[in-house]
Image 1 (spheres, rainbow, N blue to C red):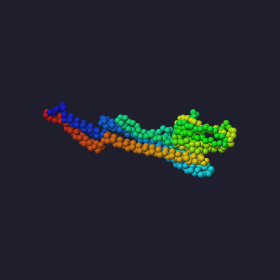
Image 2 (image 1 turned 120 degrees about the vertical axis):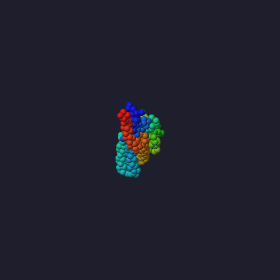
Image 3 (image 1 turned 90 degrees about the horizontal axis):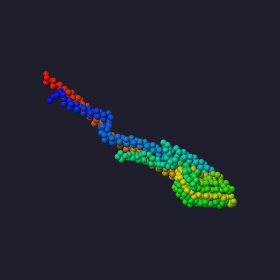
Image 4 (image 1 turned 45 degrees about the vertical axis):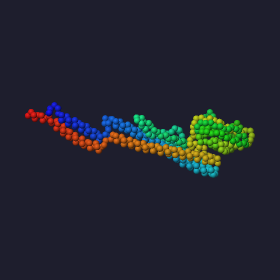
Length: 417
C-alpha cells in the first residue's frame, strides 16, 4: 500500500545510512587516533584496564629514574673505594720500604705516607653524587631506593634495594663516655662495653707491666701516666682507646702502647721507654731510683657509653714509620686497611651490579606493559583502512537508496492524472 504520510522505504534507507555513518565515523576515529578503544564508551572494561596499566608504566618510569640516580651514586662510591685501594697499595710499598730504611729515608717516607693519606681523605670527601656520600661515615643508615612496584589486585606495594654504606673516612669518633666522663681525645671508638685493667706505680729504674685483662667490642680503656706531683718532665698524660669488634687484648695493648710511644717521641721525652709484648705494655722508667722519680700508672676499669665507630681508615692517622716499632705497627695495620678498602669496593660493586640488573628488568617490564596496552586498545590499521573504504562505498549506496525511496510518494500523483 502506498502512502503519502509514511514512506517506509525511506525510513529503512535512513536507518541504514545512519548505521553506516556511525561505523564510518568510528573507522575514521580509529585511523586518526590509532586507537580502537579511545574512551570508556568504546569499551569500559578494556579502557579501565588500559588506564591502570598506563599508570603503572608511568610509575615504573619514575622507578627507572630512581635506579639511574642510585646507580650513579653507588658507582661514584665504588670508583672512590677502588682509588683508595690503589693509594693504600702505594702506602704499603712505602711502609715495607721503611722496615729497613735509614732514619733520614724514613722521614721522607713518612712525608709521602702523610701526603697519600691526605689524598685518600680528599677522595672520601669528594665521593658524592647528588649530595649523597656512601663512604664518608657521616651516616650509618642504609641507602635505599625504590626498585619495583608489586601489584596485587588494587593494592600496590613498593620494593626497595638497600645498599650498606662503607665508612672509609679517617675521622675518629668522639661520641662515647668513658668512666662517666666524655672522651675528648679518643681516636677509635665503637660500641659500648666494660673492661678491666691494672694500676700501679713505676719507680725510678724499674719496669712496670700493664696487662690488658679482657676485651670486647666497645670496651673502653684509659691509660693515665702522672708524675706532675714529682720532679719529672712527663706531667699528666691520658691515652684512651675503645675497642673495635675485631680487636684482641693484644690489639688494645698495641694501640695504647703505640699512642704512648708516639706521644713521648713527639715531645722529645727520652726518660721513659715503651715496649709491647702480646697483651702487655711495658713501661720503663730510665730515671734513677729516688724520691720524685716515680710515675703513677692507672688503667681504669670503665663503662662504654654512646655507641659510635671510627672511620675505616682511621688507623692511617697514627702511622709513624720513623721508628722501628712504628714501621712494624704500620705494616700490620696497612693490611687491615687494604682489606677494608677492598671489601668496601667489592660490596659497592655488587650493589651497583644489582641496581643495573634491576634497572634493565624494569626497562624490559615497561616495554612489555606498553605492548600489552597496545594489544588492548590499539587499532588494526589495515583492517580499519579496509573497513573505511567499504563503509564509504556503503555510504554512497545508502545515499542513493534514500534518494530513490524519497521519490516513491511522487509516483502517487500519476494516479490522479
